[in-house]
Image (tube, rainbow, N blue to C red; front, side, top):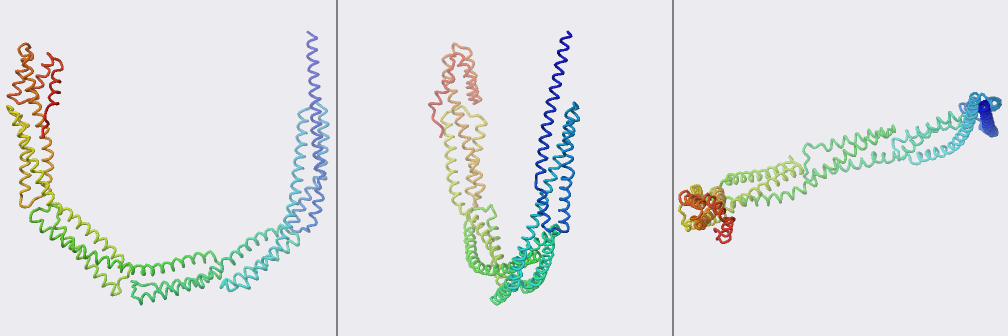
Length: 570
């Protein structure tokens, strides 16, 4: 037992020793790697880069930025590198002991010191590089801007006629740019790149603005000084010529509008001299819309005059045609009125349409008078003509509809008489078909329907023979008779079939009457329905089941045989 405990203790001691050994070796290895990284940072030629930066002859804010970078590096070289070495030695010392927590803490601090130092060195190098780039950019910008301003000055002097009232404003703008450029050049040469950068950004923006203005102004000036002037003169001369040619502009404000547009044009030229190009562009667009509106007005009148001539010819022919139609319609209405009633206000409508035709003709003459007295423009006349064209088209369509309605009256009357005669013949055929059956009588409801249809036929005949035939009423009666005749045929055929089948069933029942009480009783009852009540359907309903009771299926067999052999009612 004691040996076991001793073995366990010995094993734990060995494990602890190995853990301490490996931890110490790992820590030493990490410290050596960090020291190597520190040596690499030390070997960077940051001092050489600072020396190169001092050659830039920096002043002002740029010099302050350089000095801050130099102080940062000196602090690293003189203090932070030494502290890193001290911290590395401390970590190695702590690693010899068994206080692993403190050792890890000091190692983490060493890593943080090296990372911060590396970051600071990178910032210093980046700052120096940026100062160098700014220096080079500014010196390059000096040459670029000098050339650009020289070119702009030459263009402004050689092409000052293109800029009109904006010439003085552009000259002042360029002079201010050149003044700012001189300040930028001085700051750059003195090495104050930080202050020079602010001026350079402003210079770049204003130089672009100058170039844009010199590019845009010539077109704007040409529009305001030449294009619009020519268009206004063209409109003024065109307006005068059109008045001489008989064109009319009611409440004519063309000359007033031309004067107003020219006044606005001169105001916009002043804005151009003040280099307010955004306002110039907006006002120029408004001037263009006003000018286009006047061109549209005159072009619409020229186009309207052409349309007025076409419409005048069309209205003349339309008026003649619809007047002739109305006259022919009147004659036809008089002729047909001797024999027919007009139920759709054809006479009143024809007179109303004639009144509209006369009003249209009066309107045409009135419009011509207004045009002659210079109280109506061609465009207004065109609009009124188009309304009259639509009105005449509507009149013509209504007159055609009336003509279609009345032109079919005689044909419809003839057709109605034909159908009336046909239906009269059909009802007589129905009557003869029933009489040939020599039936003891007919059901009261059938006789009532038969005589109702006969009365309808009589009313139809009277309507067709009237002094003034109402074809709407005739057609209504004809539709009723047509439907009722079909129904009467169905009822008649049904009664004939039932009566004939009853007779056959009674004959067949005679075979069993003597020997079968049920058949005998059914025969007596069926004969009573047949001869006294004329209820042929009830007779079949009584006989059918009785016969089936002695001879199954015989009822259906008799019915099928009859239906195959019967002659349809025509």
